[in-house]
Length: 165
Image (cartoon, rainbow, N blue to C red; front, side, top):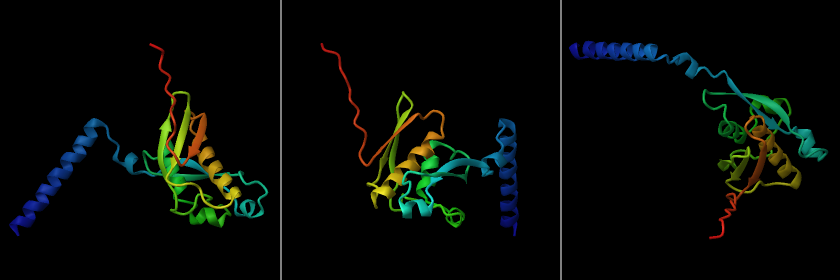
């Protein structure tokens, strides 16, 4: 009985100390846990992929993400997780496949361009591949620091030019 009381007192003291610490340093705990952060993901419509009318036509869908995930990497993670049930009910699909592919790396360059290296090549018809490329490109171009997107299933080749000695 005494051990239980002691344990409860320790938990209360530690919890109180943490809250006091967060209060002093200005950490808003509620803000960190509040999922009111969003990114825009781009998905094709089912009918455009089936008809082949406009393979690279993708449409914006706002997705709520957790604090710190409203970044290019977080947006790609959300994009590769596929269309949600709500998205599918509205006619959106993912041309990237469901958990079949992901990105290996996202490399940023000084000129505002980024290179996405995929885990494996996009699969499916040429129309589906074009839609997948458009999904990735448009999702990344929402970020003002990104001006150009290249995508491949290989690491980018960086040409280094050394001055003649």
